[in-house]
Image (cartoon, rainbow, N blue to C red; front, side, top):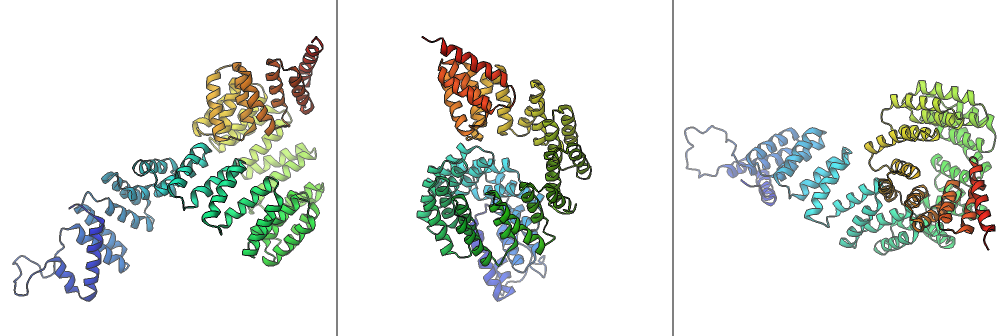
Length: 582
């Protein structure tokens, strides 16, 4: 028999209603006969199950209603055996198995449902949801892609696909899915709000504002959109409008803690210290002096270098809650920023090993010792900490950074490889190994860990950019370099370093106009990077734009700490050519 969900539902409900009145009613549904009919000689005194999937589905529903989940599952298995084409039954059983934690059984029956009816969108949604819970994101995405082939406007599939591509940094594809979602579901805030969040991340404030306006047209009371719009106003210098929005949020919800924090941060940003203090004091009152809220206030004060106020806030917390080691860590960082190194050290050392803040305390302490010129003591502390926390990748990296800065490249590599042995294929360790080899000017060896990263994470923008830039700088594999860098740029479209790499590829290819276009954009994003300034100078020089080249080279020299002779020579050459002009 071919299963139809509506038929099953009708049968189950009808059976349940009849059985409410008498068990005889249930028997009548199984084998109706007149009262004068004699039973067949072979019939048992109790009625026998009917080989009908509807019947077993009904019994499963009855068992479930009585809380007998094991019996319900057994009846569903029998129903599936009798109707081998039903995807609905498979999903019904998969759902029950999932609720009791049978992961393998859930997957088995969800896959069976999709095999039985590949066009069953609900079955694919269930399977995709299962994969998501197991963090099997590629498998989930494949199911959503199948759903979209059948229904291009299916909401969950569009939203998940957009989120997945956003997670890996493919914003172009994420935006395409969200635009489709917005067009197909114009009254749904999910599309425009998700678009706004992406554009905020990309600092594309005009597009973010347009989408937030759309969200608020649909749902004027949607608090997160109001908050984000105020942030857009603040980021674009429209502080008065931001202040109005933050205040409106607070008025509509006086216990909106984030509204007070954002308003206080805005006042700090605009130099209104008195108003900031009043706002934070009001927040303390309405939060009933919540420790978590006060720590957030301290962080805001710290970010705007209000060290004295941040110190007082955190010192009060530490006195009230001596076991709040996160607050103690923050207080140590404030004291370090104030130059009170001895007091900061004491606090870092006072955080116990069993505290979640212990790892960061050791890192901060090691960096502080190094800052004070106590390099040997810092190195000993890092190595001691690694012995007790061998899986803490940050410790290997912290020690390697310090050794690299001291020019001890071989020692840094030894530490990083030790970390890699304890944490195989760790992306951060691999990347830093490549960076150390690059410092050593061993470019071929620097590429090996980067290629491994791309094998492990094909969408790792930093590794793609590193390989592409290295090829470009050596003038080899320029087409491959361009492809890799463009992919990296699609993943991180606002990265000044990646934009510089693309400009450098065009320079090496002889397309100087395109090179200048990208290098100027990179310089706008990273005006304090001496390499980008030098690249821009080289591109201007290639087009004989001598004044522009001279300005870029002088900027690079101003920023340089090493290889200054090389830049000075370029400046001298350009000045000589300018003087030789008629």
